[in-house]
Length: 297
Image (cartoon, rainbow, N blue to C red; front, side, top):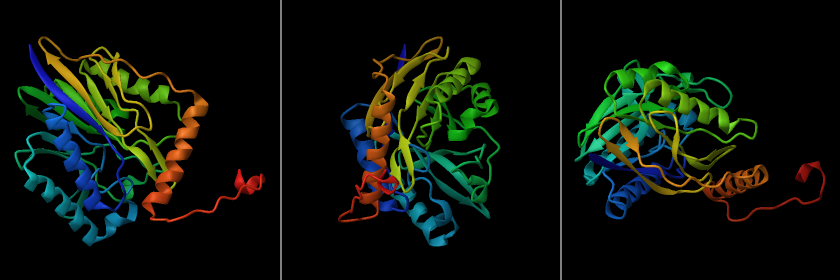
């Protein structure tokens, strides 16, 4: 029976701070290999630039910095396969991309196919949509790639399964919303795994960025749609998952974290949002208005 140890990198990135983000990626990759013994480490959507980069994507100098950040990852030649999200300019078209880096080379690249354009998402303003699946091989395992919104649509996952994927990776930057039922998100990912007959690793961003809060809560579903592993919400870190392959590739189940209470979840979201807004903007101090009126509520 073949085994593939994979690390979920549920990390907190900063929009525009490419050098710091790349430092975090390299540090996590080294820890995933040296401390956890993993062969693959998976990062969230647009991890090199942070999410959402918005109109920074219209600046040529910013895209050059993102490209330089990717080149730093290639030059590092880490002894682990990295799955990293970043913008990729191909001619006149800019894509929301994920690159697979191994031995200092990009061995495969995927372009996000389903671009959300509702609520806080405005991706059609910046990106062109991809139109092909991406399946790559690591140690005899075939991994399919999808990005965030792709998993809400049947075709990208089905195409990966048809291309022979043993399991599917889904890179996310999915924000926390008090009124967004996480259960619905879980149902969709579970349904995609069950329908395709292929396990899915759902890797989400964590942390605050301006008015948005990302809650993490990365998940792993087996080929029957069962939840095999879940990362705590609002916690940054590296989380290992082992896959075993015989007739089916299956994740080894891990103990699930306790279900958070609504009040605790809201508290964690507020703390994360305020903390990161202050820290990422470089504020040295803050003024709290505690009059008790609507202005301080």
